[in-house]
Length: 215
Image 1 (cartoon, rainbow, N blue to C red):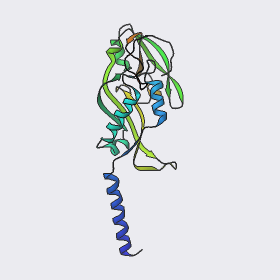
Image 2: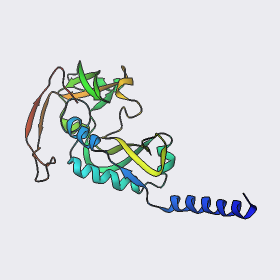
Image 3: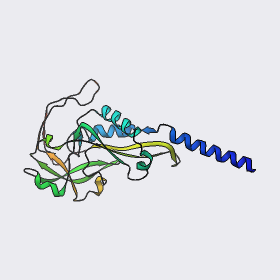
Image 4: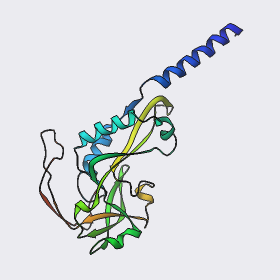
């Protein structure tokens, strides 16, 4: 390779890097994740639940991630983005140290979905109302996207998890041990009903604790 050819190659590499940095990131919100959110985070039993439709949550997530100035750094390190989203849902995971603050707390177990299967985790039932666990924080787990060969695709990112609240976000549920517990309000009077887009709007339902449910 001649000196001129080498210089041209270097210029091309620099140009491609500049284009990559200036191009809007491509965010992948997988269908499987959308389906999991519907199964796991729209009803009490496996942890935090959304107070908004999954469609609205998806729109919020895409907007937040695309506008995150440190996206690449976050995706390649902690992978965690936490943002304020008013009325996003209920944080139904609690640390062991805070269980004593719950009225009529009773320890139990629940099955929780993780990966392609389910695991058994600690849970606590309580007579505390659902509203006590309201949160305005949305947690998003994002990582660099990879192609079919397992190579990272520049400027492409994939959302791996989304949930309301922050408790237990530092570990996978299978790593919670006795540190975190799923909260099961014993009686729930909420307003939830299917809206025209199939999301959660306002409906009235009563929930009675089950000894083992799927998140």
